[in-house]
Figure (tube, one colour):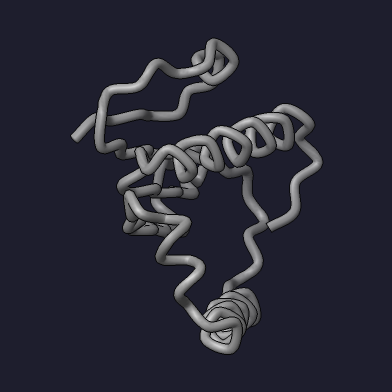
Length: 122
């Protein structure tokens, strides 16, 4: 999906930066992205990502072999390319809703509050 909406671009950049912070602090549990038809509200696409954070992130990362990491990255890229090739072209106005599930209650940056994404604490 390609957008010409500058506000959406700003939102995605802001969210990706914040997701990096949550990943580095082992706070992110689940991320759900929902693309809906803006007029009807029908769900067009729904992607859910489960995140398994490890408290010993640096130690476990150093133990994993480079070959295994490359294989895992390659597998993820193949899945992404396969999905992108099979997705239908969306020619109607869409609404993106983001659900963020965190392990603990965390203060959100003020910039995120201006958007209508949904945050949940588990």
